[in-house]
Length: 377
Image (cartoon, rainbow, N blue to C red; front, side, top):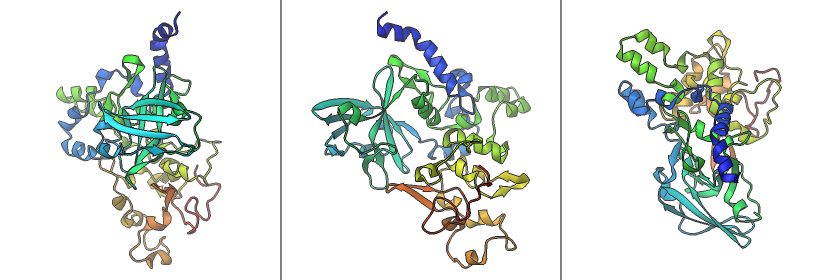
């Protein structure tokens, strides 16, 4: 049987198997697309939350490349080069970022139709190569300097040819379908397959039903006047315990480390996994629950570093008779987080807040001074 015909015959089975492998905490692939009503249905009753959430980094986390608010900056006027002499030229065309790459006498062009990231720190470009593969482009856009630079996790080393220089490749239906996971965490609802096995998100960005689950039963119960049934038909993360919430948000932001898993705390890139680090903190909520994400972050609003760092949130637990210590009280004009949640910059253009709350030495923002091996993992 010709390869293409065999692949098309096997696609339904392959897709089903792959999708089962990467079920979200919400198990979105166990629901039909018809169960998801989309953002407009939620906005009809929850207008205030919808308006706030629409401006958040979650809502803006996935775009068609040409539709991204930062798109005019994605295609520099001149060519770019990387170590080893590979060259890149760009243009925005037909809803995508097109790139032409030259290396070692070879040339390859690619259509990068997806932009991952809200543009608060960086935007990474992804495109489908063929029925079997996607590519994460070697260059990403960085807001800090308004230009393209090496994508996080990529190595700026000489490429053996133009195809290798294009970026890092992922199998669409491989045993570890990482590219599906990327789309899953940056969109809402079940993924579908389009022409040529192209992945098609149900709704771009992390919208209401990504966290609250499919809304059809909820809306139908409201319309029928069955309010208790309506409440039961929708997920409310605010009802989760601290530990459950860390696991829930960690579905995309990386959950706390399971027993026996070794984490390199000296690697600054790991700091971006906030639930992992927050679970190590000594801070506790009522009932000995770990301090969880929504204690500081409004899930419906844009990420506000100023709000999250307000010391009053810390002082809700740390009253005068408890920490803060006298040295903290003397640090006029400084917030608690400026010392106890230091910023970490794994590269010049990116900045992450260390959520392992503790006492840090000035020269080591990665791990608290007296990190106990018996602390929560």
